[in-house]
Length: 401
Image (cartoon, rainbow, N blue to C red):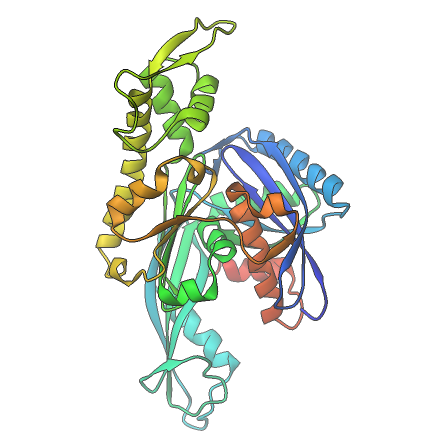
């Protein structure tokens, strides 16, 4: 990226569509120029279930972002999530031809293709092939093998894939507005780019992004992505639990959760209540604060225990030198940090996007971590290729198996 570049990230979330417009300098901070938002309609657990309504919401959010940033949006980096997204680690291997010993870029491309030479569900498509480590003739710790001499190139990758049509629905929803899709990115991976420093990635960190309909997580160890996943559980499930448990409307449950809720148990005074005012169609009454906290506590406990159970299958939890970083809209819930620390047994912090300028309020809003992370991803993508490739060329590569 030879000069300042206008980048746009769009997250089509369960609760709202977020569009962030930024100006990126080569290897420097990103200046946030504007943020557009629109309430979501037609999204369930992070996935499109009503295309026409989602298309309308995306159009409104794009228009809002253009108005606030004074930028005409022509292309975007789009985030995707959903319980259909899966991942695994695999090693690729390439033997150099006898007449050549110097490793080149083609070998690096071929070793990534080799790593993807595995069986995944027929309806699935590869989303990311994220490099972990290179090996040249068994030598570990190789950062860049190009121009090195060797007979065999190996590399470990973290590979993320999902149902192709669900990913393509997101692309189509945006392209029908006449906007190009530069790339499609897993939301959890994007969020990690926004909130983790290179030092945290090297030390080891777990990023948990709790949105309205899903919870995405990504594990970094030694600077590389080692594990990732999606839970079809998020903040809306807490709201629904509060509504069912206290028998109050959903809108009132959401306000009660945000304004009064706490994930910790035993902090309310005995018999302490919260008075809910009379409203049209609702007779005011008192609810017990400890009951509210208990509902929130057990749903968040479920989320953290599911992630910990997935991590227990791998050796990475003891390697989290930088601890756990929670982001997303639900990260603002009081008491969420202490609860997570109790479950995982490592330090926990709540974070927002780093290394940004411009609209400070946007950078400090954890609900925008994914969209800002998409700008970070785009900045790195432009820096790593000499010129912008056509979308359909990348789409063919994205869905090639």
